[in-house]
Length: 347
Image 1 (cartoon, rainbow, N blue to C red):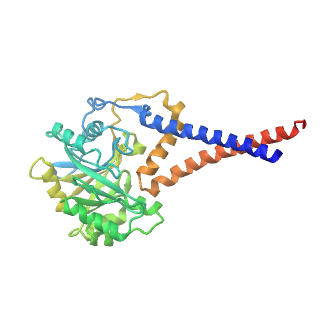
Image 2: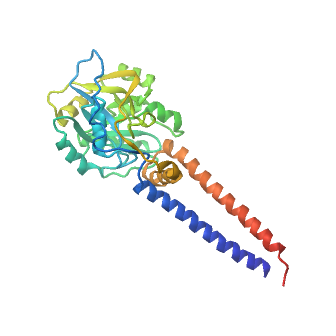
Image 3: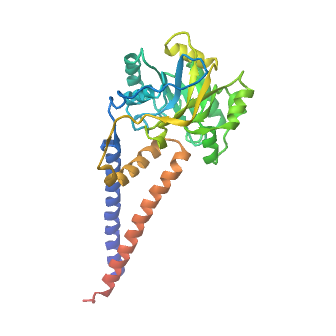
């Protein structure tokens, strides 16, 4: 009888523990979605920034960033703020490549019209999986399933679908991917044979020397391109720009940019020290207090949003630490309560 009574007590306590942990996790998601981020930007944050002009001997019409993110996936800026940041860094064309989504399409079209004379804004998507990350540039729709662990057939099918839409495909941050991904990653020459148009030889601060020389040796079949991979204006989040992709085009239009990309006519401009334009922003004084909730919310949201082991590994560790410490606290407290009950005299 004593055993059954203790079992019922522990079961009730376990249920209460699960509910409390669930409330904490739910509150973390709500905090991440509705709470103010660490830095609060506005559409006017860069209005006083002098646009950067990279010093180079390269003759160009357009400076392109083929890789950036917004709040539609894991970026910290709205689409309009994303564009304003790019203008401050000297870019005159930008591809929005949120992870595995085209939910940004309607707003991109509106902004493309609004900025028609200042910046060419192109629809894109980062096809994010546990193996390769591919940027699809110039697509208008995506109806194919995005597998977490794609086969070679899946990758080739996705590349063919982009080309069916007259878009181009970039193999993103190959050095970073090969550093962290344990799965088989198709080598550059295989991806080239499948129709990949570009290799991102510079991603943020990372320069992939092997890919750079590979493209030089195969420049009839594949091109080199750079991307900021910007998630926020902070330098650790892609906000320090080290490279621009230079294009010469016949007119200031999306179609002219796409024509240049389809022909692989790109050059790259490098600034080894990097350039930043933080803009004017407000620091959220409540962020530090709520930061654990922000972090947990990030994990719970993007663990399911991004098919990306390179991203998930670190965040799974944090989530597992939280759950392990919570469980340990439950076990210790429950053990103390059970010991206390055992000391009570029997009636």
